[in-house]
Image 1 (cartoon, rainbow, N blue to C red):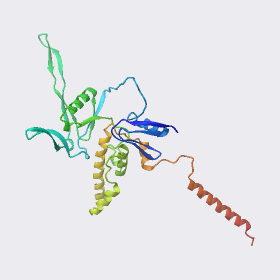
Image 2 (image 1 turned 30 degrees about the horizontal axis):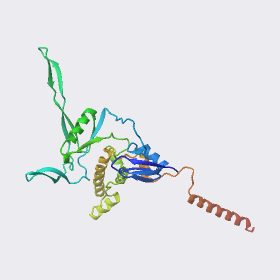
Image 3 (image 1 turned 45 degrees about the vertical axis):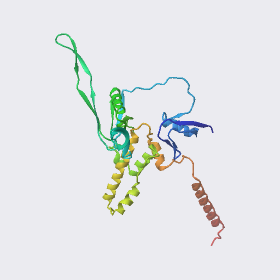
Image 4 (image 1 turned 180 degrees about the horizontal axis):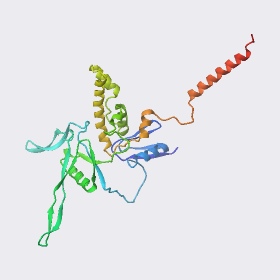
Length: 302
C-alpha cells in the first residue's frame, strides 16, 4: 500500500483516532502514513495538517471574515509563575525575573475611540464632533465575537504592549457543537473531560482521575459521598480550565463526537463478522449435541 507524506503545520501535536488507537503527529513533524490514516488526517485536521507536495507559484489568499472571535488567555493554571522582562533596575536596563502578569485571571478592558462625525454648523461651515469612547470587555475564561475592524485593533494593542504582558488575548475560534460548556458541564464526568483533553493535546497535564481523587480524599478521612463529590468537582474545575485554553486556541484540534466515543469505548466491531471465540463456542456446543444424540441412538431399549 502506498504511503502518503503529511506535515503538521502547527507548533502543537495533532492527533486522530483510527481503529480505536490515537495516532499523534508532533509539532512541525513530517511523516509517512498509509492511505486510510492519511485520508482521515486530511479530512478532520486540514489545514492544520497538509499533504507534502511541491507547490511552486500560485496565489495565497486569506479570508477576511466580518466577525472574529477573541479569547481572554489570562488565568492559565499551567502558565509559569515568573517570566523574563526587560526592566530598569539599579540604574540600568536588564532582563530580570518578574511575576507573570497573565498568570492570575483578570478581565481585559480596552476603550476604543469611535472617531469623529462631521456636521454642518449654523454658519454653513463643515465641522467635526468627537464621539465618545466604547468600552470593550472580555471576562476571564471567556471569548467573544467582534467586528473584524475592532478585533484587529484589539489584537494590535495586545501585540504592541510590553513583551511580558503580550498574549493576554488571542484570535480564537467560534464554539463548536461538541465541547464541554457551562450549561452542560454536569453531563461530563471527570474521566470524560480528561479523555477529551488528551484528544485535544496528547502532551497536556491531565491531572488526577476520579479513582485517584476518591482514594486521596479517603486518606484525608473524607469518606462521605458529598465530601468525595466536592473533591471531584474541584478537580473538574481545574480540568475545565485546562480545556478552555485548548478550545479557544485554533492550533489544537477539537475532536468529533464519533472520535471521542471511539477513543473512550474502543473501535466498534464490524457488522456481520463473528469473533473466533464465538465460533469456537458454537462448535463445542454442536459437538456436545452430536454426542448426546449418538449416545441416545445406541442406548438399548428397556
